[in-house]
Image (cartoon, rainbow, N blue to C red):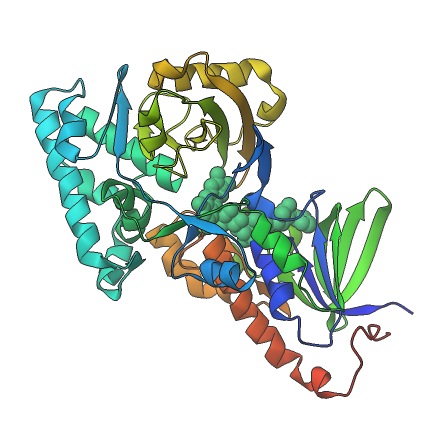
Length: 454
Ligand SMILES: Cc1cc2nc3c(=O)[nH]c(=O)nc-3n(C[C@H](O)[C@H](O)[C@H](O)COP(=O)(O)OP(=O)(O)OC[C@H]3O[C@@H](n4cnc5c(N)ncnc54)[C@H](O)[C@@H]3O)c2cc1C
């Protein structure tokens, strides 16, 4: 006799955990299987110089389900209030409050400077036209079909490379992929000094998945260190093969939810039809590496005002200070260098030489911080962010469509990507499951009752 689980969720990131949380009121057996030794997926937070920092996801976006869940689960957040923007190119770093001021100091020919100011100010105007209270409005719908690259024609070389680098730093994909709609959020919002769209979770991004995990239903088990290798249909049920330090095991489930990055899905669900494979191919999710640096800025308060600095020709594409304008009591500001062009660099976390090279690049951008770095932590992601491209947008209906009783939820099935997209998609799939399991839950049952037998 083998246990039949109502739902097996593959992956304990934001999507997998929110799904288990959303089903908490049902008297069902849910198994969440996580390959890693910890939960949270790409929201990992670590301690750096005595405070939590994010090595992956950084911000909770206002007006999204991430904000709603954070509020509901009592997560403390602080607003992201940028007053500056910055560019580093050819040995010069210019950080200032206005676009003309930033560009004036850059080592660029006059023609490039004029074009760059026009472009950046045009972006800020477009932002104000299409975004209200930090949220992208329906007016921007048409922009979803265009890419940022469509806008760059005619921009002189150095100006173009500043914008392309800023796109990679803020949005992971490149200008030829990023839709003009989401360039509003991941490029223009920084230039426009948007104050209403981002919240910084004071205890780290991982605190929200942890809070979700602490509030799942009595019939839910979250297991770490167990990697799902294969899922196949068997006599109307789903057979889930997984491996852990204890060896191989096979679980039987009525429903399976794939809450892992898109590029992993087809390798696990080997029998999915061609239309699903093609949709998954449209959900490109490139790798990325981050280095978070804690630096003592006592006596140099201008560094606490940095928010986003686009860094051309460095190992990373941008530096973000997630709490601009805040000078902590210990004088330590934690900057994250986003190496989205660098991609996935296995082993960098413990590669002191490589970390030193990244820190050197950081000090080229911020020479006054030499000798003031107190700690650093590197992290690398094989699949960082599901690129917000028109191609993926067109594939969304097929990305979301279930294959029999296999369902799909994650950043890759959402319009917006990001953890907010993952939380949103968990809710969609939870509604589907709620309906599918309705008959079963209608039967009288006690909380935590054992799963049915086969
Ligand atoms: C550098 C970086 C910056 C980001 N910035 C932001 C931001 O500011 N705001 C924001 O909202 N989002 C941001 N994101 C994106 C955000 O982290 C993701 O969109 C979100 O984590 C996606 O959630 P998910 O549950 O779909 O996938 P994941 O978080 O990837 O979770 C999937 C889980 O599945 C597990 N898994 C994989 N394979 C298997 C298997 N075979 N068996 C079992 N388990 C498996 C993984 O270990 C992982 O824990 C960022 C990401 C990165 C990397």
